[in-house]
Length: 114
Image 1 (cartoon, rainbow, N blue to C red):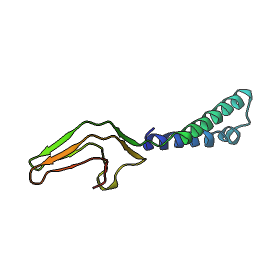
Image 2 (tube, rainbow, N blue to C red):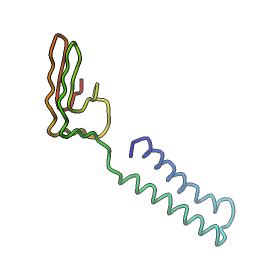
Image 3 (cartoon, one colour):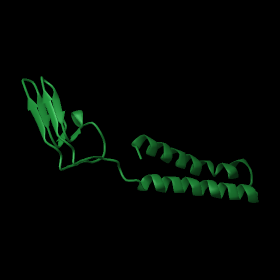
Image 4 (cartoon, rainbow, N blue to C red):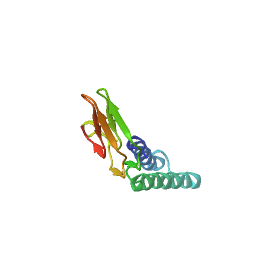
């Protein structure tokens, strides 16, 4: 689950839980209202727990093929995160060969933070 969706789910869960006392503030609870409020709290708590337990997403590159750069181009067979962008972990395994031919060309394997 991406971070924005996780935040949305947590906010909705908190809203469900926070809205429950409104039943008692607005009116004394009847049987139906008590059941509805209990379901509302249960849904909010379940949503919060589920969102909290979701693993962080990460980037993975495995068994990539070959890449060749020429004429000033660039080739990379792993993961690119310019300026350290991105969240979560990054892992590369058995990346392919990257070759650069010609002036200004660049090639790399693994994780590129440049």
